[in-house]
Structures are given as structure tokens and as C-alpha cells.
Image (cartoon, rainbow, N blue to C red):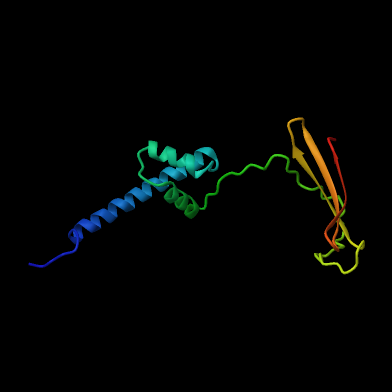
Length: 143
């Protein structure tokens, strides 16, 4: 009697056919949901819908299938982002990424940031000398 590893070959082929059918029905489900919504709103929510509909899959598999079909999530713009006005002039880059300066008081850089506090916003601006990275001055104000 011969020793075999695993089930007979006919059983393996039947199992592969079942997997192919499950794969095809899951793809059809994803394409139909994407067409209904005119885009994808995220693989996690689609995974929940697929599980409720009776499909057996992991979120990672669903994400791979969506990427293979060419779908990407619909991403909204971040709050506060505005595209720059094309009519504004572009200023030249005078520093040209040369941050090591040999002479003091020759190159200064500045930055401004806003910090959210309990009372409102706090705006902080600072000026640095690039020669020794010393703070030359700074200012804070609520407006």
C-alpha cells in the first residue's frame, strides 16, 4: 500500500475550485459595492459589509483585492489646506540649503508657529543666526 501525503488529488482540485469561486464572488461583491457608491470609502468598512454578506475574508485580503482591481480610497482634503494662488510670484531660494555659515550675523532664519491653548491660539515667532544657532529674538502674541 502506498503512503500519501494529504487527501487524494481529486479533493485538492475540488478545494481549489471552491477557492476560485469564493474569490470570484468576493471580487464581484466588491465591484458592485464600489459602483453603488461611485468610489471606495475604505477597506475596513467594506470588510464589515463583506462579513455581514457571508463572505469569509480578512481585511488584508480585501485590501489586496481592491488594490489589484485598481481601486483607491476616496480621501478628502485636510482641513485648513488651500492650494496656492497661481498668480502669486515665487520668491527665489537665497539660502539654497547651505545651513553652515562661516561668518556671524550674515544669515538669519525665522519661523512662526501657532499653539492651541485653553484660552485660544498662541502665535510664536523666532529668529536664529545660522552661524552659531543662537536665538536672536522671538515674540509671542495671541493675535
